[in-house]
Amino acid sequence: MTRDEARALDDADPLAAMRDRFALPSDVIYLDGNSLGPLTHASRAAVADCAERQWGDRLIRSWNEGWIDAPVRLGAKLAPLLGAAAHEVIVGDTTSANLFKALVAALRLDPARRVVVSELGNFPTDLHIAEGAVACVPGAELRAVPRADLEAALGDDTAVLMLTHVHYKTAERFDLGPWTARAHAAGALMLWDLSHSVGAVPLALDDAHADLAVGCTYKYLNGGPGAPAFLYVADRWQHRLESPLSGWMGHAEPFAFTDRYRPAPGMKRWLVGTPPMLSMAALEPALDLWAEVDQAAVASKGAALFDILLAAGEAASLPCITPTDPAARGSHISFRHPHAYALAQALIERGVIGDFRDPDILRFGLTPLYLSHEDAWRAGELLRQTVAAEPWLGPRFATRLAVT
Image 1 (tube, rainbow, N blue to C red):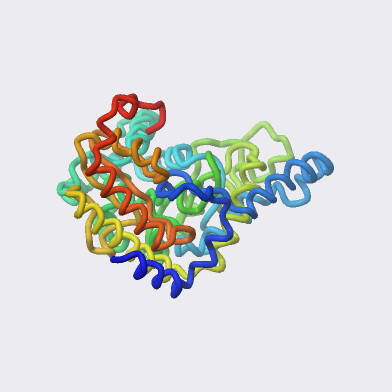
Image 2 (image 1 turned 135 degrees about the vertical axis):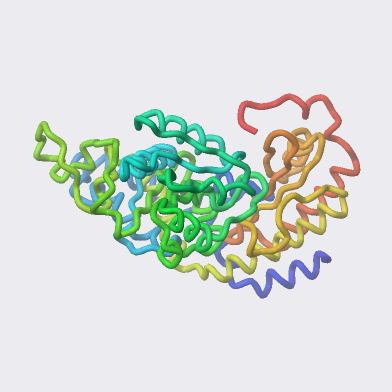
């Protein structure tokens, strides 16, 4: 593709106007929105209002002026992106905390089923949390197997199959419906981690008959660093599953201040502590933006951006480890290189921000709301030039920073 061809695609792009909603540095091509989405102008204004007016002026009165309802309200705004009903999603806590809650609840459902099945090479914190969850339920265990062995690992003892929908390294995507059906055929619940999926690919949790799902909001949803996560519980399970973290915000009457815990009905029972309102304030307008977005256009543009970067990687002789079929992947592209970390740092110095994953993966997020086709073309040219010029061989690029 030529630069003029990329510009022609931008001229016809139905999402092009969305770029103006983001506070993007003019000297950067940002290809790391799969790790941290950029700031929206609306979020900046909302955080200022929350701090200066709602907190600074209204003080504690703000809890009755919208704060206390934020987890439910934001959950309802997020639900369409998940293919879920508004009453099936709540926003709060972290992905790890929500995953722990969901796993322990699933393990406690049937005493004859005490196994969590998952994939070796899953996002590490998911496996770490699963280790902690099974340790809290007598007789429970984690059975992590290679992807090819997942179906065979399901059995009469399986309580829940926990999978990350889009793999954080390769971007390989599981098919929601068929894998949920496999879990159900074994009598198990299906729990999805959608952290690398929501806002990147179309989702239909209810149509797939999923049981549980978790995910973060600071990647493709642009909610801000450490933004609150979400939890989905299918309607049919909301009266049977109970959170193991019985915090006061999950109580049926939190301000009755009773000694004994009584879970709230519906999704409110999954809340734990006080909502972090400055973070909620940043997230809400970022979610509002998605009400204007056609998910089919996101998927189509993401595929086009992928093709541009794939061609550049091939020209630079970088092996691509991401599936080339759009239906089989998320919205990032990953290449292997023996000096991937140093190469990533050299690209950042040249204004192309991607990231690195051990041991040898160079990863670029393809975020259609604010990334143009010309951006992808320019990034591809700089990638090809940087690989060829070998500036990454310089010693200053080899020193690992704390966050890679």
